[in-house]
Amino acid sequence: MHIYLARNNQQAGPYTLEQLNQMLASQQILLTDLAWHQGMTEWKALGELTQGKLVYEPVMQTTTDIFSQQNIPSNRETAQTSSTTGRFSNRPAAESSELASINSRVLAKIIDLFLWFPAFAIPSFFFKPEQLEQLTALQKQMQSATSSEQAVQFQHQLIAMIPNEAFIMIGIYLFIMLALQAFLLARQGQSIGKKMLRIKIVDADTAGQVSLMRVFTIRTVLFIVLNLFLVPFITIADYAFGLGQKRQTLHDRLAKTKVIKQ
Image (cartoon, rainbow, N blue to C red; front, side, top):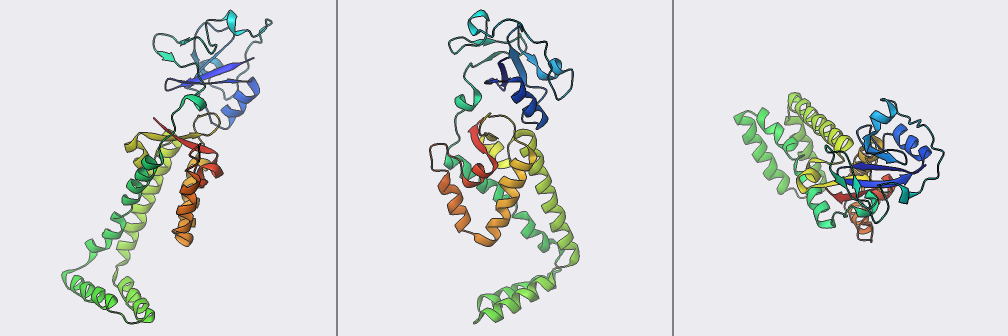
């Protein structure tokens, strides 16, 4: 049995029944995705075929799966869905999706980075006027420091001036931002920056949705940690990989993802 899938006006496949059930179990595909195989007269949502389960057990056909006997989908035909779903290209989504440019990906990353900057401004809201004067004087001393030991000492003094409430608010802000980015990446394959640039992360093989572990933990959290210790070397190496034909950066390859235009 050959099974085709469709989402957002893009078609992928064919897949075997075993591959389909594996992708259902790993949530690479959704119950809201459309599916078609031999014996069906129109596209239907997977959830309708599986009756809400994460496994599909169709009644097996006794005839041979020959494309020419069906109204969908050979490479020369157009897949017609029901009136509520529109038309889908017959090319697999993994092939027909246009890759996002490196420039758009870098710009999306810069936008995401700017969203973290408010965390550095939070302490200023907790300083009293006299503390702001002390802070200004301390910053001037740091700029005129004659040794690294002096600079470190001034930094410690600066940190000591920040109230505990400010650190708590910084932690809350960072947690909210991480949770929001994780939600958007898991649900739509887009960070805030990628959403603004109309690009998204998909599975490198199926062009389907990517699990939270791959799209957030490997692609985002792991590389944030690596950049803390290896910046700028890890960033340069990461995007150097993206200059290849498939435009997969190092974190794309580790997570088995790619970035496409929406």
